[in-house]
Image 1: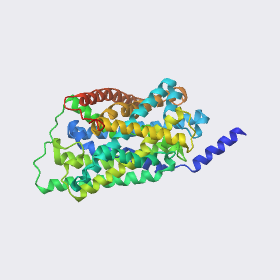
Image 2: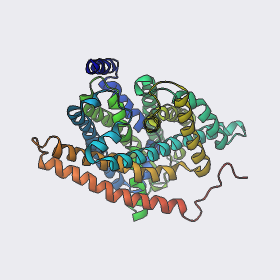
Image 3: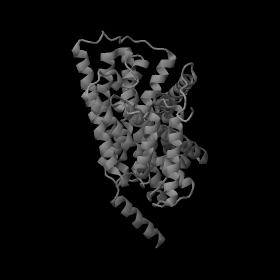
Image 4: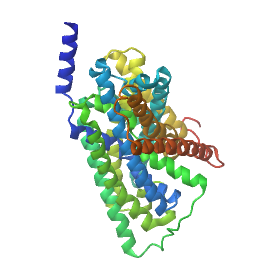
Length: 426
């Protein structure tokens, strides 16, 4: 009888879960955001047009790896029936089933660092955009204060359960990013046709440090695998998740390519960390800044959800609305605010998180879990040689590139002239 009740509960969850297209929207919405603004500069750092090629390669790798993470869950469900019910820490669970507790703990730590770091980036960038928008009106409220205001406004939304409870946020986040990409591309082309800009320097120039900083930012721009199992867990047909990944990344690269190519072609190596700061000011740029701020705030709720669910699982907090959930998620938000008020530079956080945790969660853990599952749980259907070679290549790129990018980001953070006074110091 107990088994029947569990199966009924599982069927009800799947019946009311999100669809393949809703999952694709969630994936695209939480990935395509702050990263797109930094891609022209990242391409410049990674060698100009060479950086554009690297972006394409990393996009294909992220798609392939993300789809295999979805396959991992399908394999795990087949061999561990208890996973067919709702699981609050799905990524960590995959690691434990594959290699034991140590990988589960490592994934949990990487997820917390990545999602808290990314959430901090979203809050910081939103606060800085609002401060910039209000400068012409002589409003003496700086980004430090706006960070607190935004956190207070977002706090109630963080208390919502899981992605199926707020799918509208995904639609809003995706539409705002798409519109921002169109504006940035069109306005860059307008700047080029105005004849007021000097000829751009688009030569292939790079150093090891700049290359790996660009690598870290590009990886960050395709990051989001830490949320994939949580989104898949909320689907009606979980086995279709790999297709959702492919659809999402096709939409993402369709937005990324025009912005990156136009931004670097028009401004060359003088392009700034945010492409919107390089474009000539005007109503369109103002609209783009407003839209990207809205995206960051809506995607923030999606992105931080897996981290908070994982913390609640570790603390044995019930999976229902209550004061314990509100307290934990509020504390997580306060931690992000403290980091943001301390560091203040979203670009440095972005490069560090992208080079370290995002690289591991996107390019290293999914292939090694998949290969382990195929070797142990489904040894009767071995992985084709070409597929195994490609997955091992992704792992190798992730490990080597991740270590180098993390080292470069740390050097950039502690380098001379990098320190900015925290908001809370006089």
